[in-house]
Length: 339
Ligand code: 13P
Ligand code: SF4
Image (cartoon, rainbow, N blue to C red; front, side, top):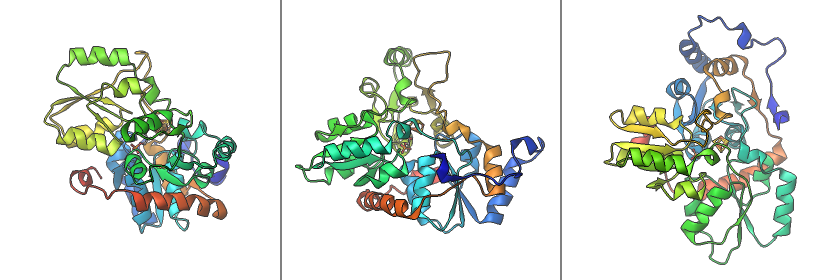
């Protein structure tokens, strides 16, 4: 879906042209003010990006921030579906994605033509779709959800309403267990959360018997069975802040540990182990494409920028607006400090 991204003009500066002595923090800050830009970052971004961002949050927090901003430019340090959501909510603003290739395995597991056929095969089902999907799939959906509002939104739907859930089968199965609803699941997965090893997690818990496990619901059930808390990235942060425990195993992308260490410097956070110790498979390969250099260049070049054709945008806007209307209000207190 790269065709929905406006790339930098030919001849625009690239990473090769950057002076190695450039003070990236100062330059990003200067450009942010010059462009009247807001920098939004997901918790899986590298530490320097989280630190320079105006706001750090989970997918729902970031959508809300994007809906509220009066900046002219949104520099979205996350993956494409997040930047696209910001553009759908703000058609008149320039929405930058520092690396145009920052996709998501869940998005690619759900091609729009196959999703359309799935919907057509189940015409009585309402399509509840995880925000980790393309604009086209959003446009084919009834309500968009994130990991922080999905359970509450399902509970607001009539008991006899059949529901199909796409594209994450682990999140869908978790929601089915939590709500007691019989959800028809699309077979997508997140390549990052699928990599955690139950065996290695149990070994780590044996070595750290007091550690509590905080897990994202994109993890398979075998991992979630060991969790003391399951929730969105914001919810995992709230859990470790509110808990009296001192040690935690974090079963999600380890970029979030930077924010946890900032907010609770006296607590200890251990990344959940993967299947293969020689590989850092729990790092999201898409999120890590964004760098400080690319953020600087994006603000300088005003590209890569997300574009969404108007008819498609209006079709995708409806289920996003339904999500925002049906979402519980955010908890204001501690998380604001994370922004
Ligand atoms: P959150 O909405 O919980 O931040 O999750 C986003 C995501 O992509 C998890 O892999
Ligand atoms: Fe997508 Fe998984 Fe990366 Fe989240 S961690 S952006 S779901 S690939």
